[in-house]
Length: 529
Image 1 (spheres, rainbow, N blue to C red):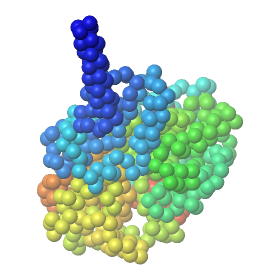
Image 2 (cartoon, rainbow, N blue to C red):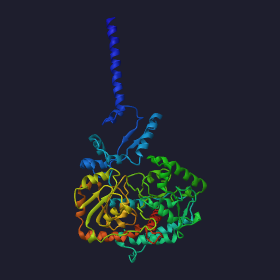
Image 3 (cartoon, rainbow, N blue to C red):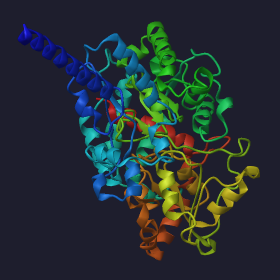
Image 4 (cartoon, helix red, strand yellow):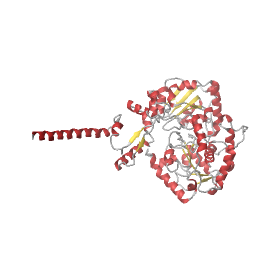
């Protein structure tokens, strides 16, 4: 009997210690330990696994501690199909968090990453695509990627095919006093394509859509998202390009504002998914009312949207159409080079006269070597300031400048600087790129994987400097290595390309309105079978 008693006691002890061990493991599941994923893998596959991408050409282990923070991008969530409803609810919460406009990357700027986190990030570097590599990708997609075959053909389709053949067989011609061959990839192809656009292109604008999200450009004519408002206004008033007969149309314009969509439907939310149902309902409406979208599955439709949310809010239900967007990260799924086009982000200060204060001082009278000022959006700008704020008298690198009327202090810095630093913020795009050109300052673009505007026709490396984010400690040396003769040539080309980035109250040939429309036209023609 004594043996039986001891045997039962042993079983109780074993059960007790087993329960304690199991409880400890369960607790570990719900606390953030540096290597908690190892424990997570011991349990059911119905878990939320969060991994992180990086934003560097090389492994983060080759970067400084400061640069390591630049590797962080938003978490990616992988969910098993058989997960329970409880985990689905949790995944929605995490998904909402990852779509926060003040994303995880923004928080890195004001917080130090743990060593364990940095080690974790080194495992999954995201390749930085150079400008020359982007050119190769675009050329390859022009050959291999086409829009779907229409359910039935139209006269407009044949006109596009004819235009494509004429562009491809354009004769060499650089005799045009209004264009400068030095800033174009191929001036002859561009000129022929532009001529055919003026001669051929007809755009149908949908009447559907409630104001102010649709059909109200006047509400978006000032500030950094003004490109979508100015384009809408000038597209709607165009006598040359607009047709009221949809069967004649080569393109169909969806006239909405991504800025107003966010401001009205989701003013206090950072969940980018919150506005998607509204756009889905719109596509369902026009595709149910007409057969234009269904004929090409949206391939001959386009939108123009400059808010940071635009790639995400349009990718699921509007991803087949041509999207002219400001947020053009080639390494993110929200932008597709060869189908989508890069929209210039323009900061309009004077809607009544958008050309006010145009230009700057000649190179010999620009005493400031390099300049940047701006809010600390995103992970990268704090790194820029950590290296260069108050470190070198030649490098005028500041946080946001004190507010004065018409941003006069900011404008004066740009007009007096040789190089204007265009550092990425929360996303890859920045209005500083166009501002630098506006004030005739050579742009220095520090934004990995950013596809610049009119990339399909302009030779950006002829008038702008591209610096990888990882090279920020050597920024001054990189700029000093540019010979004076080359700098003067680049500054001259900035002035030559300037006309393509200017809004006019009434559009003029080769201005920004026509260049945006040409990007869309050029893409549609290139993708037609």
